[in-house]
Image 1 (cartoon, rainbow, N blue to C red):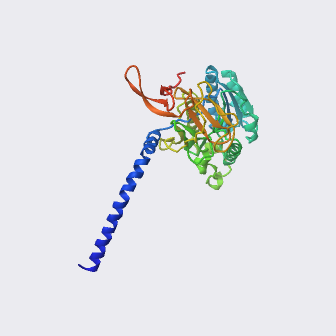
Image 2 (tube, rainbow, N blue to C red):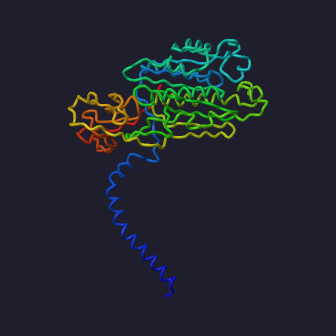
Image 3 (cartoon, rainbow, N blue to C red):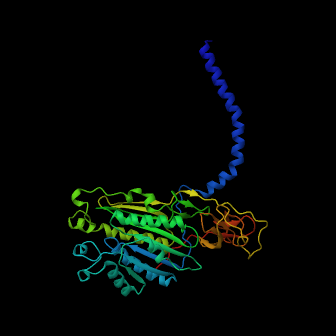
Length: 417
């Protein structure tokens, strides 16, 4: 036997002995971790789409920033949405923000008529739809500023509030103003968690293509609750950084507005109507049917292709449960007096939330993303389980690990208007 062959056999023998030594260690490690892996596999399903959970606010404020090409058509949709909110018991206030007036060039592409020439766009649309639907619409004839988030912030309500900034601007500078205002507000006060929430829904377009993006947080990826819904989405400019980049246009078109580009036949007169429709789809699914499972939609009129980015993954936030000396008696749910958030020490707010038709107990921190769901009877840990109904049918449900509470899951049903 040559020395080279001997060395090769010795090397093979060494690897074999190493594998024989490591195999039992790996088997024991996997066996110990299997319960946690099984539980995680039940929570995360790569084929599942997660809906965005906003609670049940009974006071909603919508700021429509920009009432031009897209915004003038969104205004009609918002008025109809506010009319529905009145019948649903939701106090919805609309604010139309735009400093511009109606010009001759706007009549080709925007939702205005010749009789409205020279009038402020925001005032014209607010007056028109207030008279048509009898809803509360306030015109703001000025450029958007961060101060508006404070000026029009919803008043306190026990069920929580929601502010939605609908961006329908046609220039990068205006979109940067919205991005900076949202970023500053979320850094000071994380509205994406807790009772009061702040959401940015942005719509933009070029000649024949456009996009709608929705976000409510500074996180780089969606945050998912272990109970199977989404709580946080990245802001639109975090999803698509190109939104804040300067557009590459020929020198002759650099200072032209969308209306002027339309007059030159450089921009489709239908793209804004389509973008407004998608804004309406997002708002209705978010507020009415409560099944919004998308975070972005891209359309192209030339190819006829529409592509949406579903909320299909992200980081599951398993909250660190607080240590309690003993299980509380039924009816005494809530954090111990003086006991703060286990992550940052902030104030803990206690309440109830509805998840797919089931009322559960919720503790959340007013200063960070910490959140804890619990049994509505004893605050014990909630687990997913299968429940057998009286008919013998086995359905998915929730149960408590500490008591005998359990409820079958009811999928949210869309509201029929």
